[in-house]
Length: 73
Image (cartoon, rainbow, N blue to C red; front, side):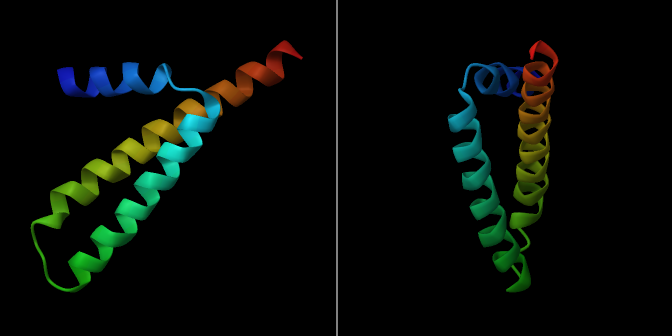
């Protein structure tokens, strides 16, 4: 749980551009992991789950920032 909190705090400190880069990195990682799963590497299952959750957190944070910016205009 502490790791998740650290990850969230780290993501909050990133700029919008850095969040987009991080999202692209995670998407690429998921692509490679799904390829490994298709080849039968069972070690990738936990990593896929973790990466999907990280991507969801990142997208949520990006959406929150988007809504905050729209509210201030």
